[in-house]
Length: 100
Image (cartoon, rainbow, N blue to C red; front, side, top):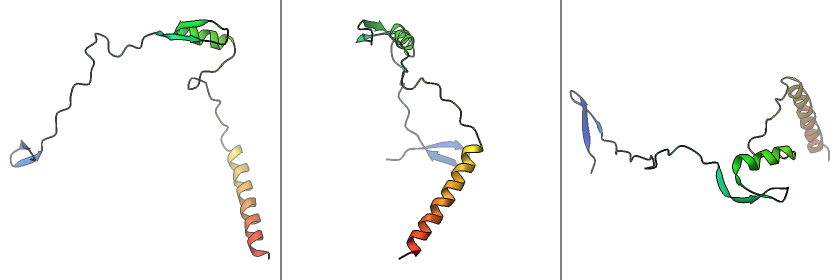
């Protein structure tokens, strides 16, 4: 059954279902813990701290997926080379279809 609610004089809308409170009952639900299950790093030692695990990885030159810093691509230069290469590829494809 559709429930309506009055939002003004002679103005009605469908009553939306109330959302459940998605917050946790824990005192600090949005705090991410630094502890983890013991994990072996490349040095052969096991770590239970995320920050220590990452620190050893960085010291050994490893890159954690998702945290690497990408180098910005230069604008304009790659675009013009791409356009010329694309035009040449189109010409080549047209020549191939025309020749028997």
